[in-house]
Image 1 (spheres, rainbow, N blue to C red):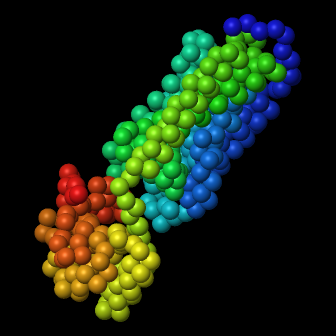
Image 2: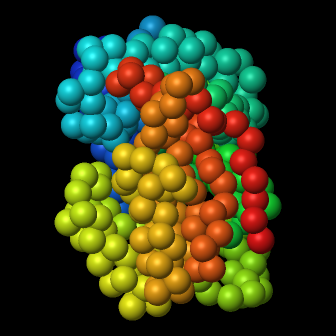
Image 3: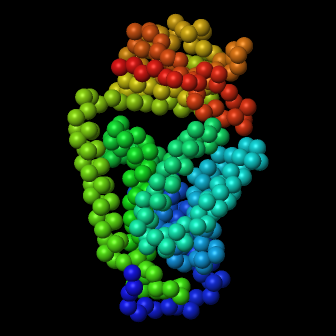
Length: 353
């Protein structure tokens, strides 16, 4: 893994650290822009590349993991934005906590990949990221917020294999693309600059093989997505109703019902109300009104509500069919514990065909 002469610029460690942190911040910004409200979803496939170059080349050895911490923590700071403005201090500090944990867990990454000749570079970074997604998906405080795959929610032509491989399969694909491109970027960097004393570099052939392999995987995924989308039995138009309030009066209930009728007039057959839209269980209050609305619109209504019970708060949703049958309920799986929210009915969920 020895190459010919490369230029070694005289960059002081301070300048390298500043440039490296700047690249990490760039990655944080690119990943953030891939998600709503910005929606620049293609950036999810390339967003980590500047951070990878910073962590494995630009930053001085002893502070290389800081690039990873700043990139990941910065993304979560941008992703959450003002979401936690009124949250307890420990939730406002969550991006900082994530940055510290990310930096600490990546302390040996640079040395490991140099020692193993970058053979595991693409797989290692991708599997670690998705593994962390799996773990934090079980933690109610953070849940599934910011999963890499979620940036593609508006691209039905690309996400159909999720029905086969799950959301983690799509996240893994996204991370493989990022790390393959990152390895290619390291190879290009090594052909121009050398910032360390040793001559261990990423060979172009090695990077090319990974790029081809991941490119084939991405192509196969897209082809499978097209097949699954083409073979779908029927299109189902879905509408989400977001009135910005909970029903507190007859007037607000009628406004919500009117929005439902508007959605049905536009062809929606599955109409989803917002979480906690009703402050009561729709099976015990305003049942006749709701059944009449479902029959009038000919749509399945997904009704969110919060009801208090002796055992605790029930943050749930029910499906009301056009013929007046209630399906469910489904309890909220990840209640926001720091805000005092609970959901005593969470657990396994029935599926209906």
